Length: 371
Ligand code: TRP
Image (cartoon, rainbow, N blue to C red):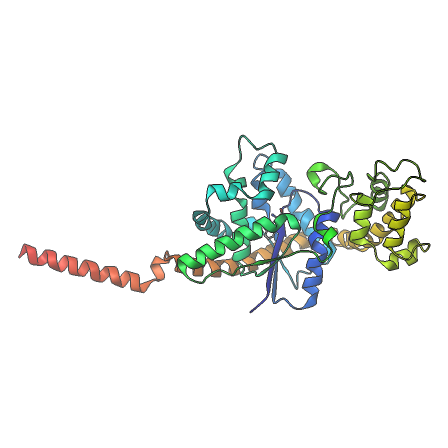
């Protein structure tokens, strides 16, 4: 079987370290592994509108930011098709048919959507489009026959929902859609990076992010003011490593090489953690180390972003060409889907003939009666 990847992001702001570790870094590795025959990367603007209908300008401004972040991370438009969701209308068309295969109560059970509804204070009036965006995400994935979807942990309910729709479609209308699998980051800590403030998630709306485009001084300032163990007041005090975002970030990012380069008194993270737990290790020292590690990781990304930013019309062209290409693929799938459901009337000569004959004989009988 062909291995096809699809993944995407909502363009509601610039992308951050959580996106990078949770998904982007992996995407680039997969892209460069040569194991995948096709890779589609979607800027999900229509999905972003499901909770930003009152503020389309925000989405309009951020499509290019996300595109720059993609290119900066190493997504290569000659190997991956980067496209904009709204420019592939077949995705809306697919969504409309998939909506018939899910129930309202199933949609209301989606844990990620539930959490998002709470965060947005939508409890009393959920936009219908927002509640149903997992169905449109199923269209995103299946339109391209993607079998692999590299995502962070929070997206697992979407993949599960997609699989259910695929099974239900295939059993009703015959084998047509491909059942996808989520591909989580190797490193567990990367699946869901907490915010700088220690909150569960690094998120634009919580304002607790390190952006891929942040300048070095900004990153340093953010790292140095990170939340740590609130019980670790004096250097001598024993500190807690679990749930301490500074250590979680180190778990996600640092290698033994980093210790050799920036903190040679320790061989590895385990030694650093043990010292922190014993007491006698100050937060500032660990934060400085973390800052060096993050700076090293983000410097080449920032440099590449600046390079692409010098030629924005070229980046728009990349998006347009990617969207044209995606549209061709999605339109072919749409044709198969319509055929499977049986709503391909004008190409279905059997159906036309059947009806021609039916009415021929009806007309003949009618003729006989009149005689
Ligand atoms: N829901 C994803 C997010 O919020 C974005 C997305 C849209 C996506 N369509 C997708 C992810 C298809 C994977 C596959 O980040």
